[in-house]
Length: 196
Image (cartoon, rainbow, N blue to C red):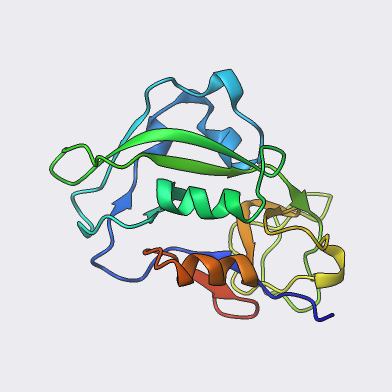
C-alpha cells in the first residue's frame, strides 16, 4: 500500500481572505498552542477573535492568522472529527469570530489544537536555519520542508512536526476530504515547496 503525502499549513496568499492578527493578545497561555499542549481549563470561557481591518474581509472555513494556528469552522471541525480525529489527536477550542466590522459571525469556530507530534524532519533535504544552541533546533526560518514518511505513524492525519512544533501537517487523504466538501480558505504547501 502506498504511503500518503503530507502537506504543511501556510499563510493564504489570497488578499481577499480575512486574517486574525491578535490571537496572542487574546489569552495569557496562547504560547501553549504552538507547543501542542492541551489547554483545558486554561482556555478562556468566552474568546472572541476579530478579523484584521488591514486584510481581506472574506470569512472562510479555515481562518488565516499570523501565528500558524489552525482555526476552523463548525463544518471543517465536523469533517476532521468524522475522519477519526478524536480528543487524543486534536483539542477543539471554541471561539466567537467577528468580521472586520466587529459583527459576530453566527457559525461557531474552533482552534484546532493538534496534540500529537512526531520527529520526522528530513535534516538532509529540508532547507532551514538552526538556532545557535548546543543541540539541533530548527529556527522559524524554515524555507523548504521534507519529512521522513516512514517515521510518521500510519494513522496520523493531523499532527505537529516534532522538531518544530508550531508547524502543523495534514495527510493528503484528509486534505482531499476537506476540499471535496468545499471547505474554503485552506492553504497548504507540499513537501519541497518554498514556504512563505
